[in-house]
Length: 317
Image 1 (cartoon, rainbow, N blue to C red):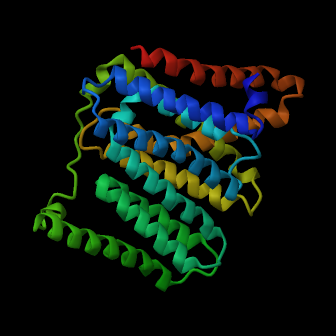
Image 2 (spheres, rainbow, N blue to C red):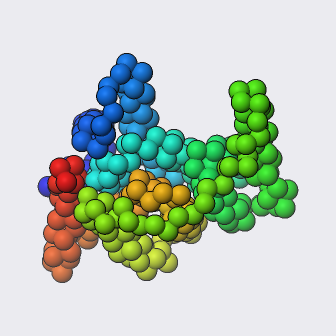
Image 3 (cartoon, rainbow, N blue to C red):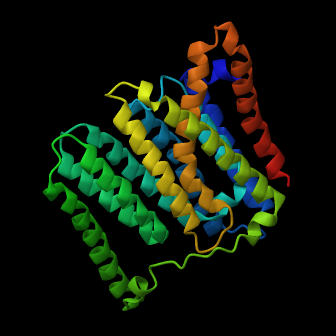
């Protein structure tokens, strides 16, 4: 059973998921692109295959470091399956880079639970968020959960609320200097903000609409469950799980701000949805031996099989 296999953190789990991402990237690039392969393009794709796998491993590191799930690989399983469901993501390299930087920022956000080196963590998070916004402007909205994390951390003060501006200005100044050297222009700053486009015509395609619907359905279902159960968490666990919910809501708006709706913008919500979905599956693991919970356990087993099978279906659409 998948609940049993991915309920552990064996090296084989990471190997299988890594291979799945590589296969999804290669198939997605081949089936959804008409560009001729050149040595330069091959090198570029190789780099982004590595980045895609590293994003999965980074997510796992964040989860373990902050105890967002128990000792299992459900979250990265969901993340990998969601990712391969939408192979169009693999063609949007700027979105992949922005998501990687946002996960690095999320790592620092979650670590604010500890009061050690708070200013450094806040500065790091603000730098990563601003770097992400260079590639995808609306990533800048993650500053909202950052300020929420600062407010809810132990011994917060007004000086710490100002630290994010330092990180923001540092990246802006450095990028402006780079643009002046390379192109002798300030045009990047003028064109930095992406116009929000509400043209969802790309979603008319079944290969986009169905995966998006499934991912959003998972988010709504599991988020409601998480909210209803959050009062049962310990006082130590609750702040980070609340922060994760704030981040998930923010990523919805980040995705909504995409200047062109291709389905690839859903990458931003996949990490928080994967973690929340893993929490949902974990609840069945704890209660699966109760007779009254048998039907719910099998429902969750079917969910795991569903997200595994669907990527293969969508790759062929």
